[in-house]
Structure formats: structure tokens, C-alpha cells
Image 1 (cartoon, protein in one colour):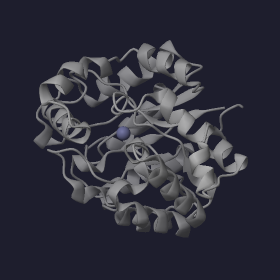
Image 2 (cartoon, rainbow, N blue to C red):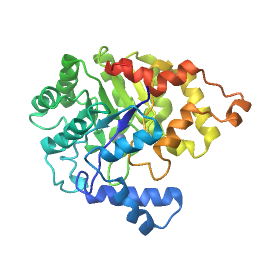
Image 3 (cartoon, protein in one colour):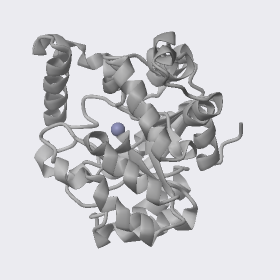
Length: 307
Ligand SMILES: [Zn+2]
């Protein structure tokens, strides 16, 4: 079974205009294309029904995807959002209703909301969400005491928490997203599965060190598509990662749909299921057991999915 641990639903209104401006600017720079051309393709990323992601999952052979709701409501630097936190989470729950066999949703919440713990409980209980996502770039640190009631709630419901780690697009701030701030949380909640999204991104060695020291910390490989643009570098980095932490706590992810114009889902899955001979010739080797775990087995265990 192939499970994508890190995906989103997007439309024009789900995140505010400054986010899309930043996304288009960085993407244009990365792929060396005119900004207007990238901006014109933005609507190709937009669908909140879940139909588009399922179609792309079919093409790529992905069985299940975890949709992560994001609560940007208190991130003032992103401008005003049109949807409330309840509405955003409902969009995600509705997509799961449309495709119950294929999609799973995590609740998105900013823990600084007055009724954050009550809301999370409501999303888990009433909307059937299976985990919690924090996007700390909204303006809080994961080791801030304000987050602790949510960690306790996740523990109570037996669901994991996924935290963004690594760089973010402007106008968001990097500083809240350094993995180091998760280390104490992992010690304070040894029974809470904590997923560091993007395996720490630009702070990847830091995330790896934290994961190696705490058996409840997992790493997802979303956005590593950017590394895969130079395949040998990508496989070397992945091998190093797997030599440092248990493969049972490394999870395939894409951050769909943000990178689909760069590398589509099909190509990204094949990076794990069809390793090129040129990589083997470099004596960079992966076992079938490692790859089966990363692409799905580990997520199946973590989320308690039926195989
Ligand atoms: Zn993401």
C-alpha cells in the first residue's frame, strides 16, 4: 500500500493572496521561468472537492493520502482569510466524505485560539479527523505552553501530531519552524507520535538528530522532490538519513499540490519504487523492506490503517 502522509487541498481562498504571491515568486525562481507564466498555472493546483488529488493518486498508484488542514487565521501577515477555522476543517472533512476509501484528514488548528482544545476535540470527534497539524509559521513555537493542551488532546484521542519544520515561503517567518523547538515536546510527551514535516527541510540534520533520539518522532519526506531534481544528491541524502534513523519512522509525503507542477505524483512515487541503475552503480543501496515501509507500511502502522 502506498500512503502519502502530507497533502493539502487548495483554492484561491483557502490561503490568502500573499501566500500565493510568495509561492509563485519562489517557484518561478526555482524553475527559472517567467513569473507570469507560473502565476497563470496556479489554478491547476486548486480543487477542494478531493477529486483532483484522487485522480492524481490513481495515476501514481497512491492508495491513501493524508490531507492536512492549515489554520492560518491568526497569521496576520498573510492577510485576512475568507474562511473560519471551522469552515476550513469542514472543507477537509467534506473531501474525505467524497472519497472515504482514499482520503484521511488531520485537523488544522492554531493553538493560540481561546477555544483551541475544544475545537480540536470537536474536529476529531464530529468530523472524524485522524490527527492534528500545527503550522507554527503562523507565529508560535511548538514548545510554547499554549500548545500543550492540544498535545494532551491528541494523546487522549490516540492520534499523531504533525508539525511543519523547515523553511517557509515569504511572507511567513522561518524562525518558528526550527526542529530544535520540538525536542523538549518529544520528551514531555513520549507516547505522542510527532511527525516532523519535510524532515526538517533546511534544518534536516537537526530533525534527524531529534528523530534519532526519540522513538516517538517521525520524519516525512514531502518537498524532497526539490532534492530529487538532482537524483544522485537525493538518494545520497536519503541513504544518509536511513543510516541515522530507523526506517520505520520515515514516511513518504509530497506536500501535494504545491510541487505537482515541478514533479508530478507519479514521478515522485517512482523515485522510491523504481530506483535507477545509475544509483545502484554508485553503491547507494536501499532494501525492499526499507522502501515498502517508507512508502506505506510505516504510515499504515502509525495511523492504524487496514492493509
Ligand atoms: Zn504542507
